[in-house]
Amino acid sequence: MNANEYIYKKIRTLDGDDLRPKLHFTAPYGWLNDPNGLIFYKNYYHLFYQYNPYGTMWDTMHWGHARSKDLIHWQDLPIAMFPDHDYDKGGVFSGSSIEKDGRLYVIYTGHVISEDSAVETQCVAWSDDGINFTKYENNPVMTYDDVPGANNPANFRDPKVFEHDGKYYCVLAAEIQSKGSIVLFESKDLLSWHFKKVLLQDNKILGIMTECPDFFSVAGNDYILFSSIFGIGQNSIVYAAQGKMDWSNFDFEINKIKRVDQSDDFYASQSLVDKDNRRIMIPWLRSVDHTDYLSRTNHSWNGMMGIPRIMENQNKNLIQKPIGTIKELSKDISNISLGVYRITDFLINQKLILKGKNGQAEILRYVDRYLISIDSPVFKRKFELKSNVAEIEFVNDDSVLEFYSNDAAMSIVTFITGIDHISYVKEVETNG
Image 1 (tube, rainbow, N blue to C red):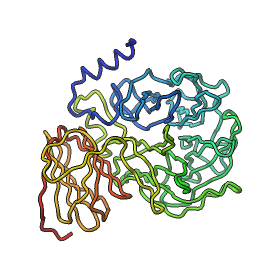
Image 2 (image 1 turned 60 degrees about the vertical axis):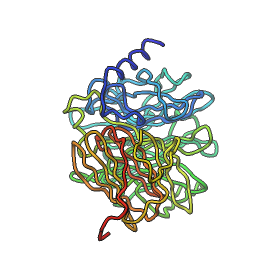
Image 3 (image 1 turned 135 degrees about the vertical axis):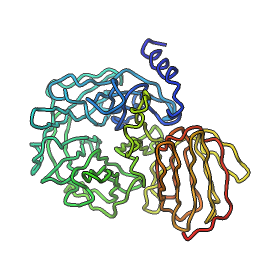
Image 4 (image 1 turned 90 degrees about the vertical axis):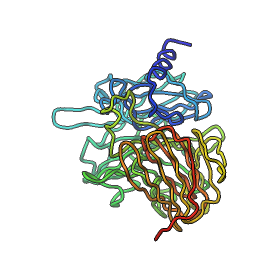
């Protein structure tokens, strides 16, 4: 065991925090947000993430780093990139990675704060071992000046790189005429980039600014996922635009747009292809209305990743399934542990009650939806998971519950710990 690994394990042991999730990845210490650079490289899954190692609230961003053999158990690694150049001294913001000729390349946003405003540009770094990175001497490689109509250098970020037909592409978020947009860049070598086209714009669902776009294909269907910022008083939401990319003229024809997760606690998702050629997505989970709760109450961590989700296409719908072993629940089970569970016969007007040490969750099935009631030490609130099927899967972990039903999903940061008792109410009088 090397010194860094010893320190990380020691920090987590000393933490002794009942609220810290066991299955959902958290940083050993400090603030965590967007997943970055997800990739399977040199026999490991690499998870980079937006990271403040000096405190439990957002600040100047670094790239934290962890790796895994199975996307479930993670090993903490040294910080991958620091804000140490003129073009990223305000923060090494979100980005993505790709392998080329055995070398791992990352494309990321460099953030600089000046007296009047911020400037965001796109930068390149690389690694031959997946741990130690060198930043390109000619950074930045993309600027907002490259995008026709872009007029705000503070809103040009989050490149997601991918390869198609021997060339490299990046989808990025850009503010064009005070509106959120998704743009496309092209490269032959990952170092020299040029603007190609605006893929999505002039749609109110894109908000006043978009973030964290992702482009991928599943079963012949193309998807652009993006996070939309709607402004003061409105939470940001992640959407999936399903359609078809016409590579002859770089037009993306949308068939439908749908929320990826029905909770606002879900944000900034990114995907990768695993070693079995499955599309896997990992989101950042935050308590959107209580982002300062853990900091205020003297916890040593803040923010978590969602359970990796397998993305499939069934009947032209994007289906999400939690990775890992799924345990079947029957009516005679009264005690549960941490893990993923499936109920296959959830009856209409039936209520499932999950009791923890400091609160409880109730899940009531109606004809066309599930009503989820959370009673936690932080809040009492009801959520609606829209679904008309009787099978539901849920992830039970400290401080967080995730629900999956057919093509619907919902992630809720609850701050409820120690859920170990489950019970059913057979019939509930309801007007649902």
